Structure formats: structure tokens, C-alpha cells
Length: 301
Image (cartoon, rainbow, N blue to C red; front, side, top):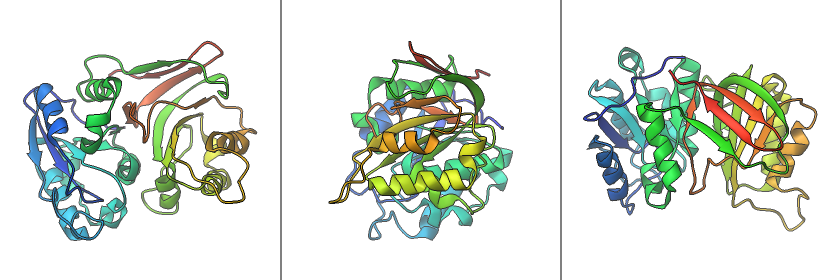
């Protein structure tokens, strides 16, 4: 996998909207955070655009993103928020100049579209907090994003044990993101290849039977057969029907994956939660899950 150049003081970050509009969002905390790291900030043309739920038309969002892709002075593109809409513009993008001058693309939730597409192209990207979530993010969430971007120390996680964890050791390339988005991309050119990978999943505001349906899809398309380990992040604000499904989101994952002899970490601190710690997709990670702790260590290069 190709690693974009790590950031250094004086570099410029572009903040753009690829999906939902951000009319009322306060970007000052995010801008202040970037400046505290010694970075310059460019606000994209989509910030403030309003077209129903979206930040402008598909063409406007694609053009703004394309402008940042093509500008060699932009070292990181930070997607302002998620929602829905990135998939509507992904096929309008031309990554020719990006390949000449790779840069970090950062975000989570709907940005999983970009993470997955970049992974199929052979480029790393960062799953982490976005400008609209900075104000409520934990210090750990912000600091791990800085570490991932500047690479001045090894990114690693040493977590307390979870009663549902499945013990074991594994090493593989980290992929994944929002489960609903991953599910929606299967069969498209942006679908990830799960073979020998470590899969991270998280989700928000889904019916529990939807989680079961999506996990069954991962099972039936062979994704779970070929992975090395699973990190289950935040399964936040799940919903149920009047007649209950009978299992919560973590139990659904446990049920669908019980036949596979792979380590699984539950409630990994990433996703639609305040403690949304950074993950570098495309990087080799070492997993060690036992009854004392769970370790996730990223290759440091």
C-alpha cells in the first residue's frame, strides 16, 4: 500500500463537504486544532452550500474535492461531516494527479466510500474524527489523529478486556469503516477485498435486524471466510422493532462470526462515539487478544 507523505508544520489542510450540508456547524474548534498543530487551513467551496440534505449538487461537491486532489499544496483533505452523499460523486473523481501527489484523506461514517475506493487503488487513508465532531471529541481521539498524520510515534492501542472478546493473535492489513456503507459498496468498483485483512466495523442508528442482514451479507459473500481478525467499534443508538430481534448489535456479530477461529475485539474505541480514535486503513496491524488486554499495534514506517 502507498503511504501519502506524513504532515509537517506549515502544511495546508483543506476542509470540504462530500455529503451532508453543514450550514450551522461551528468549524472554529477544528480550525483551532489544526493551527495548534502548526497547520494552515483552506476552506473548500462546498462549506456552507445548501441543497436539501446535501452540501450542493453532486457536481459541486465533486469539483471541490477534485480541486483539492489536484492541488499539490494540499497535503490532507478533511471531510467536514458524514451523512449521505459521497457515493453520488465518487465516480466523478479523477485520481490521476492524486497518484502523482498522494495526500491523506480523513473522516469516518459516509467517508467510508472514499476509504474503500482508495484501498482498491492501493492507498492508505485515515478513519478518524471530522471537523464537526472535534468539539465533542476526547483528547485521545484528537491526539491519535495527530499521531497518525505526523507519524512522530507509533500508533498503538492497549485496551481493557471485553467479556465478549475472542482470544487470539493475527496480523494483516486494516480495512473497513461504517458497516452500512461497506454493505452498500459490495459488487461495486469501490468494494474492499477482505482476503487476509483485519476488518473494522461500526454503525449508527440502524435497526438490529439490519445489522444481522448486513453481517449475513459479509458471511455469504465470503468476506468473513478470508479475514484475519475483526475490530467491532461503536454500535451506537441501535433501534429495534415492536417485536424485538432478540439480540443486541454485539451479540449479532458474535452469532454470525462464531464459526470462525479469529480474534475479535468488541467495543473498540472508534466510530460514532466521542472517543473516536484514529485508524490508518491500508496499514499492517498486529492483533493480540487475551484475558488481560487487547493490543492493536500499527506498523511504524
